[in-house]
Length: 262
Image (cartoon, rainbow, N blue to C red; front, top):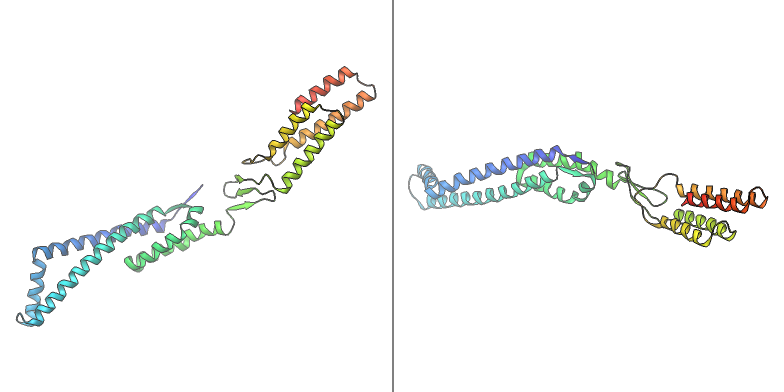
């Protein structure tokens, strides 16, 4: 089945990886600064310049700034993890079939909302464009019924490939065809045109039509064969009864007609 490339999802995925890497880089810089004390000393120097001395208010402000930095580190690390995972999924969903696009619609919508929270308007906007401009159209082809078409005999046809995917062999139209064929065969047996053994052989072949098939010719050759055999046997019988051909000639021609039909 054909897949559709969603370039918006690809762009979203790339930017997710880039933004996540930037968050990781800034987090490492802050962690190293906090671990070595360099960042704390810089903040302390700035606060001393503002307060003039190590007053209780300055120490409280220093503690508050350190808490904010730790919170920022935790947030950036968490955000980078989410963006890395989101990038992987957007890359995965950037090449879907129409059926997969319909099945994954809810997940893609969820990751699009996530892109707004952790990536802002840029990532959220790109993800929304991919969702609405590409995936929504794929979904419409499935939900709207244009991807498949069901015939009157119960066959489901894939409109994009033209392949008959399934067939309801017990559809009324199909059963009616089988009934007509069986009645013709029984009539031939009752008139003596075919033997019991020949009838059973042809009947088994007709009943095989109830086995599901992938696709079926527009004109069933079995109907044509049966109609031709019936016509030829009836004409041979008329020739024999009129004396135009002998019993031996009739038997030879009759066997030939039946063998051609098998």
